[in-house]
Length: 154
Image 1 (cartoon, helix red, strand yellow):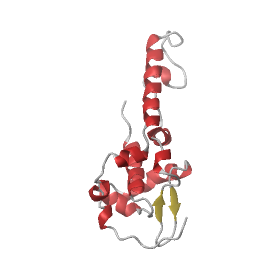
Image 2 (cartoon, rainbow, N blue to C red):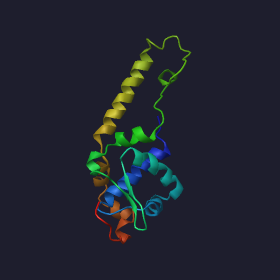
Image 3 (spheres, helix red, strand yellow):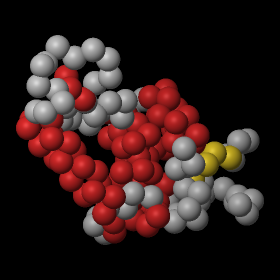
Image 4 (cartoon, rainbow, N blue to C red):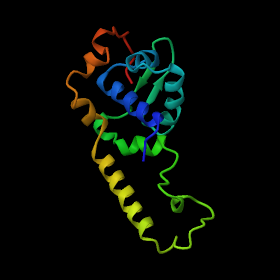
């Protein structure tokens, strides 16, 4: 199984916001820090905002921030918003399946257990865990070089 670039950059965007705690994060700054297109980040931003994983502030000094503490946002929360399918085999997909063993297959059962274990591990890690694992994250993302405009209280 391979996670999409959308998931990868969604996690990175939330890590950036967590590291930039107390300030609004701007998409151009996030894009520059990770070397990805702003358009791609704006595309990712919509489902994250809709799911309540980020909130946006409009206006000249607007930006993005986490709506709750980073410790309360699990990797599973992000993955379930950004991934379209977890079909590891044909029998996971909706619709007609050609396999005569679909209802009694050991592979189907094993793959479901593996997928559930994957989800359980993702639930154990938060954005805060990822940020704290990198003590120099502000330096690595260039956050220590950004001057923040005064923002209105949330």
